[in-house]
Amino acid sequence: MMRARVAYSGAIHEAYPNGEGLRLADGRIVREEDVVWLPPIETGTIFALGLNYADHAKELQFSKQDEPLVFLKGPGTVIGHRGVTRRPSGVTFMHYECELAVVIGRPAREVARTQAMEYVAGYTIANDYAIRDYLENYYRPNLRVKNRDGGTVLGPWFVDAADIADIANLELRTYVNGVLRQRGNTRDLVTDVPTLIEYLSSFMTLAPGDVILTGTPEGVANVDVGDEIVCEIDGLGRLLNDIGSDALFGRV
Image 1 (cartoon, one colour):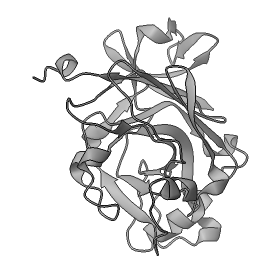
Image 2 (image 1 turned 135 degrees about the vertical axis):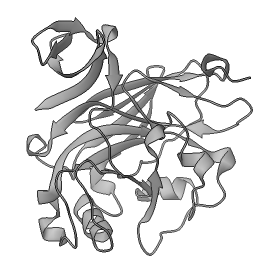
Image 3 (image 1 turned 180 degrees about the vertical axis):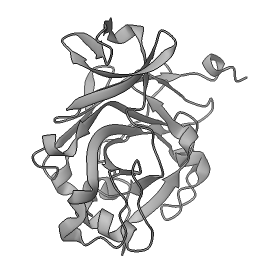
């Protein structure tokens, strides 16, 4: 099942696809443009993988690490489908990162790889923006690169794990102003989803609502104010957002 969370008429609703629009949980049919899209789940801890596609690591001239490169993201980073992400003035290289987002469904502690997928509730799409100007080094992505307000777009749908037949063979695509700029497949993950869950749960407990952003393939490119970015993943939908200026956010 695909479902979303939206704000409409002064309340938060669960919503479902309905042709060209949405069906709210109370039965009302509304247009996509008439709601505010929220992240499709209430997120817990967000774990983000760096350089988890070999082609992207090569693109950035980075050699393979001994274990997954993982960092955490704060709750203020997350916005929903059709949201706007700020591009600070003066930066030279800000780029999208289309990623499969894995949502944990029940507490997971010291989980073996072979049982790991039993702990997954479902999936959504993430577009996790980065500003390369601020990067100190690839082993320690600093806060200004990856923890910016509104810099991580999630949605539009949460899709139950049972509805995705093969999580290890999903194509990812990113379009900038309608032009295909990035393409990859989850079969090329350096560390796959079961192994990531095994790794993280080996030293900490994963909780329901925790999200694992699994990394992005090659093909990142600079985006500018006014650009429309669309990320697609097979079976998960089409995540859209725009790039806004400092002025739009009341920044001088």
